[in-house]
Image (cartoon, rainbow, N blue to C red; front, side, top):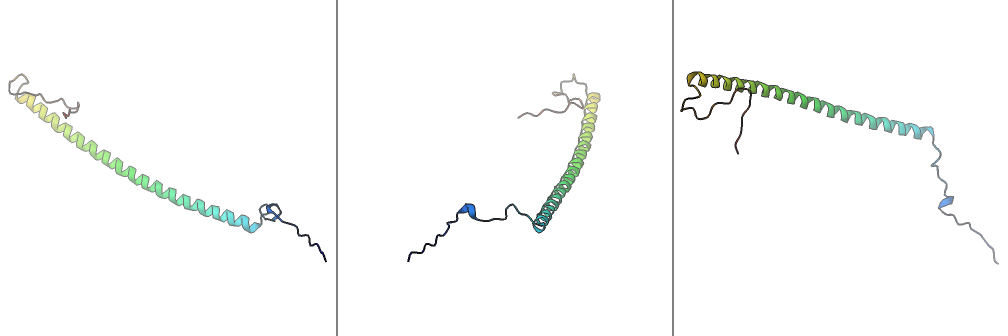
Length: 110
């Protein structure tokens, strides 16, 4: 009673897959998924752009305010130095340190 039921041993190579086949439903699903990802990225980039524009406006306003303050201080320093030169000449012994001319800036000692 020896019946030989020869079974074929299947390996990895004999497993059938659908990797090469594609149908319309799979293609449209991937297309809609990609469209969704692109819309999400577009929304994120628009938000980043809006934040950047708002920050640039804030920086521009601050730069204008700095320029106004700087001009006001320069005018005030210029007026003081003119008053000192008119009131007391620089050769007087009371004037130890002459005021810096307007527009040259200032020095800081550390």
